[in-house]
Image (cartoon, rainbow, N blue to C red):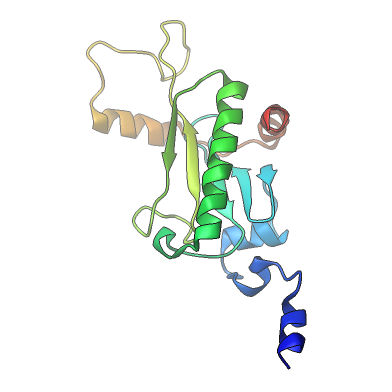
Length: 172
């Protein structure tokens, strides 16, 4: 009897027994929805954010559905940590910018209730920059910076995603 039960679960993927069909990330993991896939292994995927804060904004997501980081099994937490490091390294090389923000929300500010880490390249401050990353005198307040961040977001263009994916994958 026990061997029958065990054989029924051999080679069974975690997402097949722990997923949420209503979850946007679970649909991406199952292949139902498209994404800009940066990296994948047996426990995680990394995809480009479709509403990036900055160029290169990437999400690292476990393949098993857990809404809360505090409930994530250790093997997925370890895989996420390794994936965040791998993708962060590729981003710093691909974008020639070593400054990053790494964020994981739980419930509060969590747009998709599926554990995921955001790896967001920090803004670059250059007098020659034509973007909103220019240093200012006097410096912006935190509220002004957040408002500018929000206003600068736009949907990721498919062509931009394709070229960025090629650049990132070459660094993995």
